[in-house]
Image (cartoon, rainbow, N blue to C red):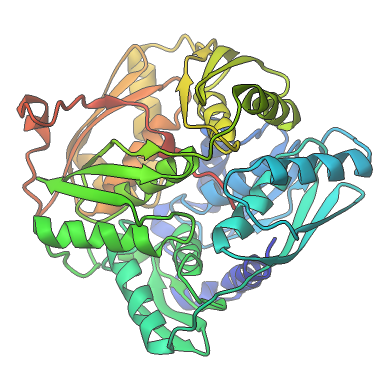
Length: 502
């Protein structure tokens, strides 16, 4: 973990001591109910290998224990548990028990991945590995490189833990007042955080967050949102968790007009240190955002789309960004792609066949889950020289569940999720051959976004048609497919539903 992440973890542990201050809401379910709901969420989360994870709950504090084969499963288990209704804190005691490998081999693979990566340009990153624990140190030019290096190391087979001691150096200084203004605007734009009573203070680049959020997930998300901003040194996350904030206690959201929404999107992209947004243009009409222009990597294109989807007021995104990657021979790209697929803990055992032509990588073969399919494309997109990924991987993971059973599974998961549960009684879930449709009204953009993620993350669902309307916003969701200029297809399998990276 990075120095910033270490601070985040320390503050997260403090959440346990704040339970008496937030007034744990017993009405959401007993501790036994919460444990059951968390276990169910982990079982469905395609990113988490939960067969050996044990869940226990005491007064809303969930303890996760057991073993998982990789760092990603440990992280995603923690993240998903924090979204469950009634959870006010998570103690993550999960042990990572990967396949044993020599430290020298792990070290070489991590170094190779860093050199093979399109985002990382710094050559001075030091890698050490002792007993499967990787330590990254040195200085990098961007926070994007800091995050990317940690992500790459965490995915290598044999890695039990990653200590990210990388430091981001900034060429220009910014005042505390400028940083504070950026943080407040970022919180206001974010679909999960908008309307929450969050206060911001900044001193010498240290951002202190106070106030309340509804879930432990929102608390972590607030800190992560701040860390992306330029010149932030660290975050003191003093947010308290108040489950009552789900029950219509957020500040009313103002419907942004098209000019305001376009400005908000531009700001979101320009302030994300993982993206060079200088050549991106945005068009907005009826909540439909279209991205045009160029980026330098396929990963930037995906991150830009993810950022825009999570801006308050955006209902749909069309990503027309063109990747203008540094020219690289197809043979070299092919070698790089083969290497990445071969060292990734999740992908190395799968039957994936890449082919490269003019920088475009086509993936064919068989995988078991939607996450494996999207993760393969994400891994390939990071390789230097890749201009695009055509994902033709076929999933063989047929659950053989009836439409009725899948509908009930989705509804149960929406009810157990702290973000979506207040709106479930106004939602309809329809499933046909693994394609889910959501109909109804929700109170917040967070509920709309989370309902999509929960539904698409349910085992057996592979596509989604989200027709949920947000109260107070009269965008014509159900008419977009008839507006010829949009060429709108409501059915999609968006990459951004699986949150990649540290």
